[in-house]
Length: 364
Image (cartoon, rainbow, N blue to C red; front, side):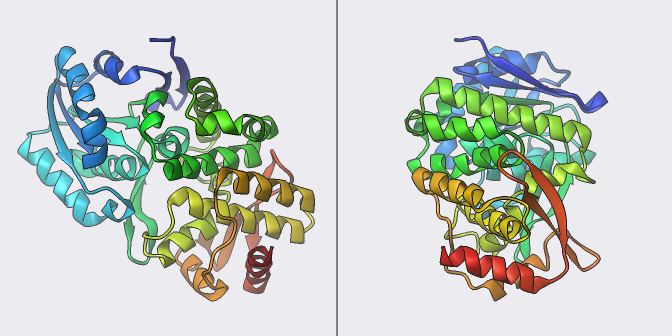
């Protein structure tokens, strides 16, 4: 196994490490053994990921002396529900999980969010080990402590801020990802470039072919750099009271698109790609950035194979945004860009302004 990169997340008593590298699933037991855990762990996964990696992870944990149980939930965004969370509670009870027994979230963003929410709320908190197996989860959702389930009215409306005890990102798992999932995950990497790192954006532009081939070196770089950016933001604003909101670039419209589609037609990253185009169009209209920044973003998203527009009408999007967590005092707080590598938070009180940006983005 090659040496792993470690990204610390410094949050006082809630601090933890993100370990990034190749072949790490076989090392998971040893990594967990360094934590103050009881010997009982519960792996939460879905049938697809469980078939690919469940045996490897179970064997690693057992070699380190853990008693391992596994429970599976259906694949897909619709599994992020209170009903599935209740099923996990029953599994925790059945396996007599105590307050030092760890939940191992093995899978993509849905598994990480659902298992994380269950871990945060059962017995007022169980240790959580995030083992993300998709690009999107490795660069974004497994880090930072936001866990949640969806309601029919909107995405992630029931949740908590709950930091994991450890994140283990084995980039070899990307080799089993369907191409569509890989492309969707890249949307979050592009987001980090847009909000904080112009060089990362350019790296994706110049290394896209090798990234899409799931080559380990560029993927390790993308995951490590993305996690470092997110860690820096979370350290300064753990509970999204200020600058952490910049991590939501593209997410206001993106979440509305996912909700409107019933979590069926668009993957999360695909919806976020469209949302970034709208946010950048709004930024252009406000004079915050040049149209060339929008063109460059659209070119890269198109090369990746991500959508840049949707067939949903603006009225439906605006209605759904009304339930968004980022609406306060009748104001929509929107993340805009001041050029690739720079983000700012702006209040929008005039929905006609947002409607115009959506319409303009759809017409490009």
